[in-house]
Every structure is written in C-alpha cells, then in structure tokens.
Length: 451
Image (cartoon, rainbow, N blue to C red):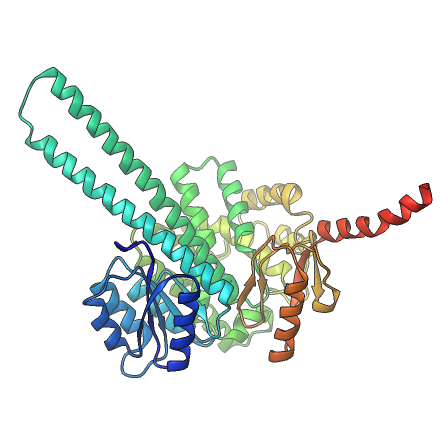
C-alpha cells in the first residue's frame, strides 16, 4: 500500500451526496479518503497524491468512469481500480475491464458490507502486488550484482550462489501469488458471467469439473487439461453481447432471426479472449464449443475431427447444463431427461467416447445435481439455515455468498428490501441445514417423553 499506515482511497463521483456518503463510509473504517467531483479533478489529485484504491462512478459528464480509470491507470498504475455502475451498464463494465483493467465493479446502489469486502480485497491485492514488485526489483538487483562479479574464489561463488537461490525462491513465491491472483480474477469473471443468467448460479464450476474429469480420462497432457478447464469457465463470456430475452428462453423457441444473433456469441467470446495474453488457444476452444459432429452446430458448422477435442468435451457438459435448466429444449428441464437426450444424440451431435465418459461422471457426481438445496421464499426462512449457493437477485445483484448462515438480521434486512423494490427473493437453502433445525425442534419432545 502507500507509505503511510492508513489506506488512502480516491473517490470520484459527480453527485455530491454520493461523494459525501462514500467519504463517510471510508472515514468510519479509518481509511483516508480524497474526493473529486469529476474525472479531471481526480486526475489532478493523482498528480500530487499516492492512493491505494480508486472508486469511480461510471456515468459522469465530460469524462465517464471507464475513460477516467483508463487515464488513472496510466497516471497511477499501482492503484487498484473499482467501478460503480448501474445495472444496465454491462457493456460499459466490459469496456472498463478491457481498457482500464479494473479490479472489480459494484452496482449502484451498493451494499455497504459488499463494498467494504471489495475494498478490503482490493487493498489486500495491492499489498501483495507491491510485495511482488519489490521482490522482482530485488531479484533484478541481485542478478545485476552477480553479473558484475568477476572473482573466482570458491567461497565467494558459494555465497553468491546461495543469494541467487534465495532470489529464485522469492520469484517462485511471487509467481505462486500471481497464479492465485489470476484464479481469483477468473472466479470474478465467472461470477459475472453467471449473473447474466439471472437466477442460474454455480453451474460453471460443474461444467469445468466435468470437462477436466473427461480430459483426464482421455489422458490429455496437463497443459491441455488446464486449457480446457479455463475454456469451460469462460465459454459463456460471449453471451454478454446477447439481449436478456435470448439469455433466458429455451433455444427451440427462438425465431430464425433470434438464432442468427444467438449463434454469434462464441465469436464474440473468441474476440474478447484473443485480446488477453496467453489465451489464444483457449479462445479457439471456446469459439468451437457449440459445434456438432454432424455439422449442425455453430458458428462455423465444423464436422468430426475439424472440431477441437476440448470443444467437444465442453459441448457435452455445457449442453447438459442448458438442458437441465430448460435453456436448450422447452420440453426438458431436469438432469435425468437431460442425460437421456445427450445419450440419444451420441454419435450425431456429440463424440460417443465423451458421452460415455460424461455418463460415468454423472453417475458418480451429478445424480443428485441441485438436489442438495431447497428454494425457499423469505417468509419460510429460519435462523440457522445455510445458503447452498450464492444468493443473486433477479437483477443480477450478488447479495449473499454461499455457506452464509441466515440470521434474524438477514431476514429483517431482506424483508425491508422486498418492501422497497417490490420483488421477491428465492433463497437456495442447504437441505442439511433444514434437517438440523428440525432435529433441534424435535429433541425437547423426545427428552420429555423419556422422562
């Protein structure tokens, strides 16, 4: 972080009331805060102040949040950038991710707990990134010293060799942190992708796990398995380009014009991923993940061996998920019938070897797919119930994370939320937590009976 002990946050918003609210939010958490009511004033502050985190609104006159954060990245590259945006600004968010390399974004109005969590995460990321840069600089300096040495004494060689090994260990540790940060970013992107499905959450991990299991069974190389895993996590990223109606309705209800638009999303995905360092192979896998053996897939109508093996694997797992969630065929909306359809189309749409391996994976891991949770309305909630999946509103707002224990305070807050917005939330509750509550209710009766 910055040289001082207290974190320093730059707040940028053209609305004074929101700026004041964010300033009070920071001061309550003992964070130093600077305020700017425009992107230009924010850039002027960055010329004189070192800040750890920048929180900027998206919609501002003259210079919007995406443009400001892109310029802020050039002016203060080590500051972590966070965007505040409205629900309808997904295109702007994607622009900010591509141009300004933002760390995260939050919808307005924000939840204070969520904002605090995101800022704390950004501060932690900043601290680790500063440490990584320090270590890289240190290693560079050590290597320069080593290159300048021109002595042959054995003792000095041993000393320098030991220093070099310590430097290498530091780089390896730094690389591990970088890898972890990449996976954290991947989880963030996956979460955003799932939000656009409005209600269907935590499915991407299932597709990735199934794809990896099949790839291992086919004895692919470790690097190929990892490429398939990442491609499976990102295969739906192109759906950001689709209208909401096409993301929610079963595909067999689409008009011809709708299908033409829908079939472009793997191409959009390839364009997005190809622009990221090291993801070109993954981008090709994603582009072809909806190609079928018989040439009736999209977007290129590839056949047989022309389809990458990784794409064939993801196709089976992804189509299973779309089927069981009623996104592919109107008549299918459960895992059992989804598997029946996959098997029926084996050899036509899908590679028979992959279908056989997916069925084995299903029998071990997916027979009770989604049956571990009960969807409850707010009035059915009780203290002590546990979320089986992330709680996401119908507008895509992440409200509570998986494994959160429901409290009376949660129930009170969400009652007020439903009254304010007029909507109804559905809580994915872990069935085991319901059973435990029932056991607690029953136990006093059993005790009295024994007495």
